Image (cartoon, rainbow, N blue to C red):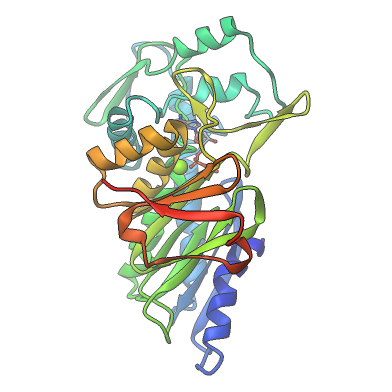
Length: 340
Ligand code: ADP
Ligand code: MG
């Protein structure tokens, strides 16, 4: 696993060389189809608590099994009123808000498109326009009233892959705080929350992956008491006739989104960071900036854009000064900030 966490841990170990490390606990495990890990200060049981939290979120919200609450909702027939849990309600409500604000770019019912392109069986399929059109007709086929959902089309399927990991991180952070933990870091497949700071510093330093080489870090951001999430097409994709298709769907075209190399969001909560990074990735650079300007003045974002010669890292003005491009990338990447 350690490619991801190492990034965080390395910076931290070097800098804490002369500090007593006896109350620092690191953990890692697999869950929700990815790897999770973290660092906890002064709380030896943090790893177990985080793992139990992620497991229960998975049992409720996984789109990959019929056994979860979401899986059961996906199997429900038309006009069957299904009472939903507060977790599902919370994720659906935030999804709908991002759906509205992003003009439909984020869609919690992208399930049929994911299936059509072969993501669930991990075997790519290049669909015809007719197949795509029939899938698009299924998007949004439900009604949501307070604590219930009624599907208006049997084949409408929810997929919370774009938001559930951020939500899970929020739940874990709430549980850790309730146990009195003040400093630590949780990483669920790139959905990270930085609680407090390492002992000898005021901020956590989080690496932003190079979307063109996911084992390397292109830049670092300093943060504290914030969540960060990145969406890209480089982690999960299917290959069809030698072409890679990323797992984030554009609900307008019914095809995988291609406008950005990656989109990163830093927000107060994991659920917003996760959901919004997926939405920005779908929208592409111009519309992503518009969305941030119109609805999310309080979040910071990092858009990595492929230009002809250099890749461009376009950041919100609030990040200027908090983001550092790694030396070996300075000839290939350019950081610029956009106004809002
Ligand atoms: P990751 O899952 O790698 O962290 P994201 O948070 O960007 O990446 O979520 C991508 C996942 O979101 C897909 O695997 C799928 O489950 C779901 N998804 C795909 N397209 C959309 C979309 N347009 N809106 C909302 N969710 C989507
Ligand atoms: Mg997401």
